[in-house]
Image (cartoon, rainbow, N blue to C red; front, side, top):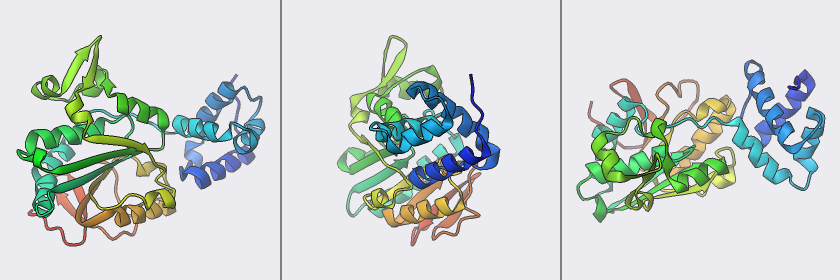
Length: 282
């Protein structure tokens, strides 16, 4: 039977989850927190929210359970070539500029933050392979990070269903995927361009390990954080990005309420935020 989260326990869990993960659940999303907590209560066989709260803090398995709770709290819906206007912006506008700035070092470092099951990171790898004629002469590193270890495991395997691949043009699907038992698996030529690792965007120490990034995508992730949390994460992104780098958030997201050091440029119906001296043609 589903348990109802009291106001007192809601505030305790809200504070605990915010302080440890940075994820923010305002009152209007209390039901989402309640649903996830009920799922984990059943999984670890706790009889009450009070018992589960103690479990998260003191049980011998608390670290693993905190990971499981984080996995349960985050939505991981994604697919290849998501939001076509942003894909076009990257292909026609952002990546060519980054290649121009990076020519002298022949390297490009791309970060997919909140990468979920890997579709975005692999999409970027396919785009570079397909649209950059001499990309094999470049040192290209694509890093996918997420707080959810289960989605990272799936990303490394690189197998997807019909839903995930539905926006991939047929020639690219044939070229970069193998098909087996109704699953589409990313070919090794693309897999080897991407690495996946666990990272908590709210952990300043972990964020400092990310440096010299040329292109950062963090799409549909900042919605999980409140304004102070977003400011902290944006500051970490700014530190991670090198000069003349680009940053993109979700198609429906905005940084309008977050003071930041990025300059916004509109391309069609989407925004690109860039650091320092990058110049884009209108």
